[in-house]
Length: 365
Ligand SMILES: Nc1ncnc2c1ncn2[C@@H]1O[C@H](COP(=O)(O)OP(=O)(O)O)[C@@H](O)[C@H]1O
Ligand code: SF4
Ligand SMILES: [Mg+2]
Image 1 (cartoon, helix red, strand yellow):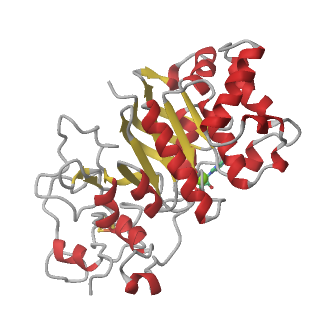
Image 2 (cartoon, protein in one colour; image 1 turned 180 degrees about the vertical axis):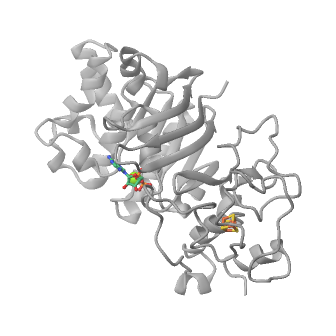
Image 3 (cartoon, protein in one colour; image 1 turned 135 degrees about the horizontal axis):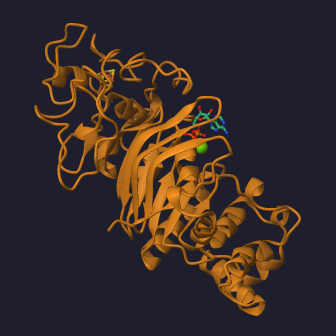
């Protein structure tokens, strides 16, 4: 049984924004899954949905199985028990997440006491141990958040997330607000804690390079959907979905001076989740879109060993059919979907589909 098994998860906000649309993800203990995508693609919404932390009015469907137990159908008492003790979140920007008028030690001890994991004296001792675990002296428990640096505050957030010995950590842009040196320290700290304690990690970032460096697997989101998923290095270095390729090409690479001085970007803006384009939602920005893409909504299909991508140009003929060890496809294919069909010729008259996709590759002339 997987530590985390997300099945066909959808989240629609009260105003009609379809922020998450049929996401399937799996994670085992000791595994690190990266979740990437542009701002607004639904990463934080997905993270909040995993622990039912969304604002009132948001509609969630699907399943979030944590050790086999569905968080979405749990009674509230059980949800409260699962938060912190089953899974916990490290948010972006520790200054906003910590309470400015309480000492950080008291804030770390709070969930320990709330979950009756220890007496007051025991919680104090555990707080000191947790601070030392994240590389801070136990005496810093007496500090107020404003007395700590940005990196130290983020370490406090990580200590807090570990307070009740969760099995899963969800880190939402944990290093975005930090400078690169501190960012590297925090990433190594998270990696080490996950390895030492055999935790599962869902790490969210817009920075594909950071995720490729830290995680085992990588899922790239666009407009509320996972459009590509696979081994982290492979997705970063050889993405199959045109959007994932564009995202990857936006990062300069070590040892490649051309990309360092001219990283490629992607024209246009991500779509408004309340008014999504028809068919493949990426088609208005896709450099290799076919004439049929505004009508066809591709589901995730096999794109190599342990890899999936949601594009009509991806995969061998017959791809898109389920295999036993892969999560189910996100949503039923739209009428007329080419999920199991041969890719058709690109609209721009390019010779064949694989070649068209090759042309969208970073660094390909
Ligand atoms: N509380 C909310 N009410 C309505 N829409 C929201 C709310 N929070 C986020 N959204 C919308 O949902 C989409 C996804 O947001 P978010 O999950 O924060 O994306 P990301 O973390 O990838 O930047 C965005 O279009 C955002 O405007
Ligand atoms: S080729 Fe079509 S299906 Fe593939 S990403 Fe582009 S628009 Fe979407
Ligand atoms: Mg976010």
